[in-house]
Image (cartoon, rainbow, N blue to C red; front, top):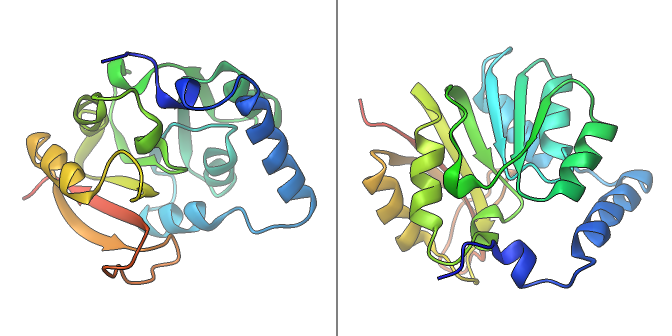
Length: 195
């Protein structure tokens, strides 16, 4: 087992720059890049504390900050965190590996979007779910969105959520609330601690 996330091992050395530039171009073209933010915003009372875990270049966290939330973003990729700091002032942006994350605080919503779960270091998925769950306040939500045809699937996620003391509350096929079907290749899961 390696401790290096697949984000670095399964992509080429220019992947971070390509990813950053791709989303700059999409934004310049007027693409709708706020689907995840609309979802999390609807789930969260105004002024919620949000942890954007695997924040990348800050697209989600920056939008949530502009919508009035208190955002902390964390990512293992220094290039992308630097982009978040440069382009989305306001949130707190940190470089850290999610497998060892311990911010010493809790959040109303912890969100991992952008396929974060399938880009983790192999074998660290349960550890990451536990670390993320430890940052969720009582009655808070853990929201995870990722593709289902790679290294990690819903049965694994459900077992890891259960081990972390969380249960699935709702699940969708997309960030715009389309229903999950057996043919879905992506899932968005909302999990909470059972009452």
